[in-house]
Length: 317
Image (cartoon, rainbow, N blue to C red; front, side, top):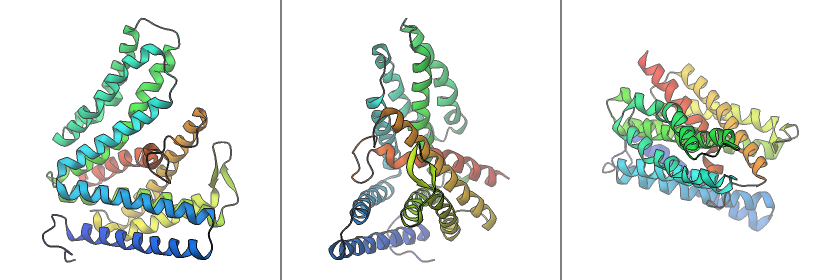
């Protein structure tokens, strides 16, 4: 496969995938504009807003990937910062808990530095082991024990949701068993993001067109079995077609794409339950059409870590 632009420091496969994504976005933009003029509806309006949001996210990825690899780490770290900020803005924390938030935010640069340097083992245990002990102990030092168990559960969980899972996207770039090959890492990163987001779109589209039987009526009334199954089948097919971005075999691609679809649904459902508890529709309004940042990366927070470890395990065999 030949490069589209020889001067661009991206392998041919990545260049072609990006070109296809841009073409699809351009086609979707024109299609929904014409559709809206001929037969305006709430669905078309929502798809137009989602398409505009995809343009923004696509250019952010291109900028972060093309300018400098370090920019990618910084962009992902900022993404984690935004997700934590959204979570903490909605949490009803005790007054003394707010003094501990500094240490929660401090985890972001440390975790991404570990990813950047390729300190694989320390990266894996920093949050789920060390911070799981340190955060509760810092809460103990405040001297206030009323409702402390709630804070001990919420703050470490927020780090897992907002930092740990997403930070595996950064670790993909510096894949330990690929000789720090940033180009190969970017291909894996693009594959994961594309498949995860495609799964969200496919489940949304299938659910809108054919959805009748609700799968989680008390958590997310818009989720249906038809959307869930249609999303799984579509995502598995797309993952198979995008396999040239990975070192995986056909059967491995099918298994991983299938798993990403299930895990993405889990992440979306978990955040839906959290929003139900908060009594809000979206975690924020940072991204038009998608709500807050966490509304957009909820699936990635649950797909990135398993994807990394499965691929790492396969390559190590």
